[in-house]
Image (cartoon, rainbow, N blue to C red; front, side):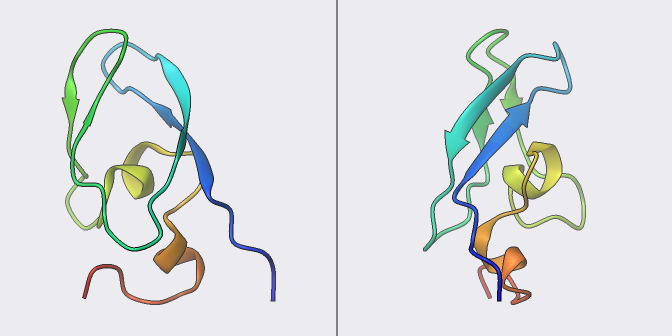
Length: 70
């Protein structure tokens, strides 16, 4: 079993700004404000959190192949 990655680089789909963020292990993050353009990001349809939609790494529950926030 591989180690769970707890950091992901979120890339804003509006301005392209990327920032490394720590992912919560016990909750989904539904909203994220881009620190560059201030756009409020929400998960894409079918994704559980902003890390699954815009991150370089999926959230910890998805990495563990569990459902997220269920």
